[in-house]
Length: 256
Image (tube, rainbow, N blue to C red; front, side):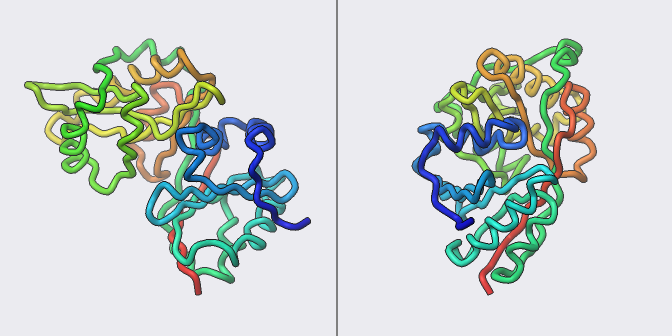
């Protein structure tokens, strides 16, 4: 079956919605907020997303093991029309489908986690206030100090789904979202960090707890991505009720 560009959001929502936790980022990108920055491709029931809102563009392709072969075939067909340089988030083994056309540099193993036991949030006192556009300078300073190189789309602060803690007028802890879609009932927590001088006091857990309580008012699935070797972060999220639901790898690709 030939690869085809897919422009029908209803078709994509139906396919991706069969596993909303695995595909939370892609479902969120169906919203008007992200849709203009996306290109979608389909082969049968397999779906791949090329997101143009970052530099380089990012390819997202996820599948349960039973559907991986169909998605690998889609990626093989898609390789000739992809940009010469891109970043990729891929289910395990799918990078092999692109290795003939690209050099593939691994950028780390990651876990997808979902809030499966929200009752645990009650054990962590929440903290923080909702941030807005006026807080962008403080956010830039905090990320520059505590989380350099993070992927931060400043437009997301306007969703009202960023929560931060200040001490002596300075922003010292924050939790936000990479996607938030009440329409498709999914959110992905991201850009979580704490200033180095206040780490170890539980502020990271407190702002994530506050954000998750807020998100659960508008979505059914709260998810996140985390580096597999970031043991401290994994333990924090597990304490808050998150559980691993899938593994994936991140890669830098350059055309041969």
